[in-house]
Length: 332
Image (cartoon, rainbow, N blue to C red; front, side, top):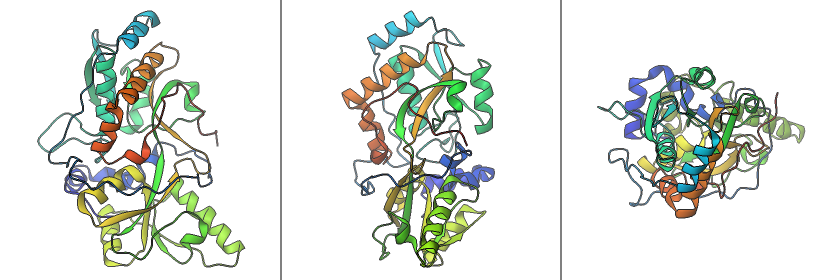
């Protein structure tokens, strides 16, 4: 995949997070089991002028949701700071979350969904950029009210946190825009290909399982390629040394839209073979999650949610309804 301008800036500023870029989703679910391909249609990457660019961020605004405000009052929940919703977000690269050049506050889908939730609850949005490893303790200890940072729901996490889903967790196969490869949907489609994947990630486990299927059928397995440097993996794809990349769909979809150098040829659920949900999380039993879900469902109903996903090229990851504590990925 090619680097978009803002992704290049973010990588230069936060080099330590580069490895996570090809495995951001996997990094949030390190204990996932391997899973099977869902029956998902392969969408066309958004590339229209209606989509905002990273240099002209459109911050999607929302409205107060009276029923959510009322539910919040009845819940007994008290924000850490009166009148504010303190939202933790781990900032990496577009479209999920990043700190724009010259700015101090994060932008992207995750901060924006957090701000929309705060607005819906009638609270002031108070974002806090955190390291990924710090949010669980921060939520439990009362340092943050909510986390909106590409968190995948797992049964293990549900023991400590409440969740309200707002996106599908998807992985994507991307190839050069002029590649002859048109689809990668199952094991047979990767036979003999060289594919960039993050070491120790869930997507690596998907490919290893598919390779087992190929070898059992007497077919050539895919050759997995590992790069410690994200830019090097981009160069490898563009130069033809590898055939495809496989990682979180969100970041790859953004790069494809911004540069036009790559195209999406296959989608796999992040919890392969199980569907996985991305959700807002809060401390277990504190009363906040039901009002949050009410806000998200209002955003879905009035079209604000679709507007947000379209702005960041993530239409393929949309959901029809937010669920409180949906089925999570099983414990390992």
